[in-house]
Amino acid sequence: MAARLTVHMVVRNEDQWVWFALQSVLPYADQILVSDTGSTDHTVDCIRAIASPKIQFEQTNITNANGVTAVRQKQINLTRTDWIWIVDGDEIYPEKTAREVVKAATDKYEGVVVRRYDLLGDIYHRQKETVGEYHLYGERGHLVTRLLNKKKIPDLSVAGTYPNEGYFDRKGVSLQDHDAKKWYITKNYLYHAMYLKRSSSGGNLAYVFNRKKYKIETGMKIEGTLPEVFSLARPSFISDPTKIRSRVYELTASVVTPIKNLKRAVL
Image (cartoon, rainbow, N blue to C red; front, side, top):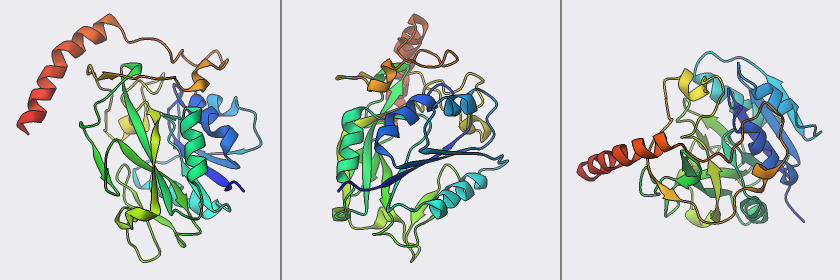
């Protein structure tokens, strides 16, 4: 019997990707808790454009980074399923990746770590995994903790200040310090649009808290099939996600990338 999952999503000015992010996990979730923290673009319209009883949507307004943590804790408290699936508004799952994480959601594991493509310029290119790689449960690369088993982690809580908040057990031990054998790490990847334009207004939550992330680099070409949701008919106010990056981007990246690589080698 498949596990029951509740998706947690906290967004603010994510109208370029949030519709696709929701559509990519909607078939696999039992419930989706979405909290908008003060969007001024079309994010709310994007969410409301998806007519599904699974989506429980609320609007609130936060004025500081601590507010994000409070919203995440509220979502934990509201969750009645054993499994939590954390999805950001700029994370899009191909079907094979979504199916893999759902299949891994068993009592064998405390949680699931998902590999990700950090997109550069468009949905066809990604950052090298050696750049900004994470170390999680004995693995290295672009990894992110995304599914949590409340049955295995009673009194689960979130603490810390955005963007460095983390999840902890009842003893206050970070889940990242738990036994690696209790965690599943995917073979497949999600698409992460952190380094792309995320809002038509330019006012991402990251920008609000002085974390400008738009990045220009050459990167690597992504092989394989795109997330299927990119081909869905979409509301008219959502931009085409399949546009290739411009010649100006390519030229700028060809100049910037060697300089960045040199700095990384020195550091």
